[in-house]
Amino acid sequence: METQSRVAEMRQKLRDSGHRITPQRLCILEALLAANSHPSAEEIHAQVRLFSPTTSLATVYKTLDTLRDIGEVMEMEVGDGRSHYDGVHPQFHPHAICTRCGKITDIELPGLTGLPDRAEEASGYEIHTHRVEFYGLCSACHQQKEVIE
Image (tube, rainbow, N blue to C red; front, side, top):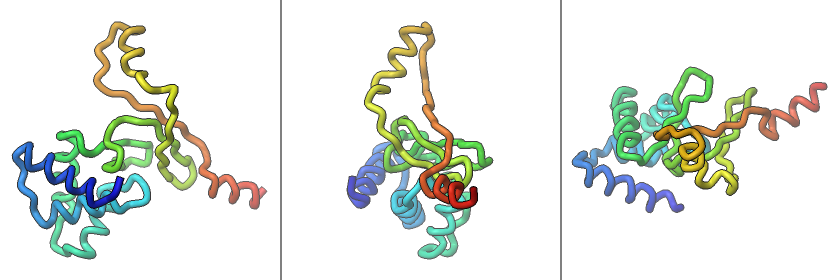
């Protein structure tokens, strides 16, 4: 999906849920969606400050929390002590995570479609959320490893 149309969707959802659209929030949306990965709040903040130097890290966190609460951002904890955010694909989906560099990659596994429903049926639980993550070396780190060995 094109970044500008995704920003427009997120703006509309913020408006519909009663939130103001401030210049800082727009900068945060654009920085989140322009990232080539699943950025942390600190990484988003660093990008936002290039265009809006007075925006605080607290504003970034509050905006990300708001976007998460209205279903426009998925928050992930992947073991590095920081949350990472996905605004491009905010619905839950599988990720591959590099154990060396921390890169997070969206992966599509069609066989997982309907997994939460199947898990509810098999367990009797009411499933609220789920995560599917695969850990290993990304191709760049794997190639580096082979060069070193």
